[in-house]
Length: 335
Ligand SMILES: [Zn+2]
Image (cartoon, rainbow, N blue to C red):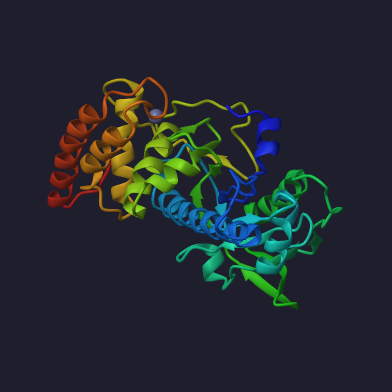
């Protein structure tokens, strides 16, 4: 797993009861044909779009499958970020584009159907206080840091764990009061890691997906296969984490799903169900894994435990038959 230092050097955004997002990598090389500012602006645009896709799919998977998740919590479903987590290069851009300030959490995404969207929270809203507790803007930091944002997110998570929460926000420079009624969701953060490696993993408390792998997926349906697989590791209790309580999380003892085969085969199978239960088109799974195998002949996903892409594709064709049969029978779609 990532060390704290690695997290810091990668300059992660952090999100309460929702999605962790990535940001602020240094430029990969000299941009000779376009100006540096334009290149940074384009990278930020690309990264923001990826953050928002991951947030959208994660929120839908987490709410649709809450009854299967061992840990649940009250979730806003938003993705948050702060100015201080970005590199010096991108910071002026994010301040002007999103109205960010110091460590205060700004809404990067309020996916349709989430509690944040239901409360009419919007991209660009800056959160100032929760239930009367002011969040801390902190100092302007010389290097990217997310501890300040993480502390603010912990305050938000605690407030949301109690249910209906009043937020003081700033929108287009104007103060505004918003009431949010959180939704029950799986109790895991999702984090987009800036990385050129095609990988994803779960550590018992969080799901990780690299920017390269998220970018490789061509649709939300494909992204839901990856995030569904990682969420399945949680559902199947394959990953342990000492801090299973987490901020505002509760154990959900109603579920005990097991499966045949090795853990990766189980996660593929249950992950397909999780994606299907969230309304994603799962018939694309075999083609996705074949495309992945053809593209990614050197690197196995996520490590070396997985069967070949072709074997995964064939196994998932069988799981799809199961899903279709259960759907036709009209019963609950349980793995
Ligand atoms: Zn796996």
